[in-house]
Amino acid sequence: MQRIVFCDFDGTITVEETFVAILKKFAPELSAKLIPEMYAQRLTLREGVREILQSIPSSSYGEILEFTRKQPMRPGFLELLDFLDFQGVPLVVVSGGLRGMVEVVLGATQQRVHAIHAVDVDITGSLLKVHSDYEGETELVAKVEVMAEYPANEKIAIGDSLTDLNMGLEASLVFARDRLAEYLNQYQKPYIHWNDFSDIRDYLLKSWSSG
Image (cartoon, rainbow, N blue to C red; front, side, top):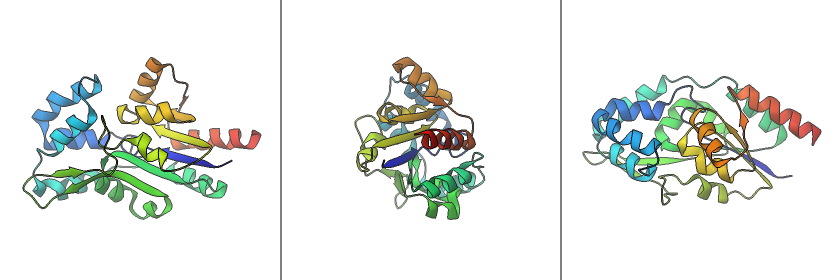
C-alpha cells in the first residue's frame, strides 16, 4: 500500500503555537482584532493572516526568524522520521505559516522531509508581502490542494488547529490534538488523539504490523 504523511508545523512540530505568537508580537492590535474572528470562522484564514502579515514591516523579518529559531520541537519527531524512513513512507510538512520559520526550526532535519509547503514572503518592500503557490478560497495554503499533488492509497494527517481542519477532514487517518480535535468533534470526523510524536509512531507501528 502506498502511504504518505502530511504534518502541520506550528504547534505540531513546534511545542508552542509559534506563528500565532509571531502575529501577536509583531502586529498586536490587528492580531487582537482578527485572530478571534478566524478561530470563530467568521473571517477566513486567507483574509486574516494576509492582512496581519502584510501590516508587518519587512525590517522585522530577521527578528521573526530569530524568535522562531529558539522554539523547541515536540518530542519524538526525529524518531517518527526514523520509523517512516524504515517503512519507506514520505513525510510532507504543510504549514499555513512562513516557510522561513519552518526551515529555521527544522535546520538540517529539513533534508529528511519529502517536501515543505508554506507561505513565502517578499521582503523587498517596506511591508511584508505574502505569496502562496496553493492559495485557496479560505486558506493561504490550501492543504487539501497540496494533498492532491501526492497520489497515495492512505493519506495520514497530523495537526493541532484550525489550519489543519480541511486536511483532517480529507485524510484517511488523522492524528489531532487541541483545537483541531474540537473542530473534528463538531464535524463528527473520527481521529486519534496524540500528545507527542512517539504516540503517532507507536500507533502506526501497531496498525501497520497488524495490517
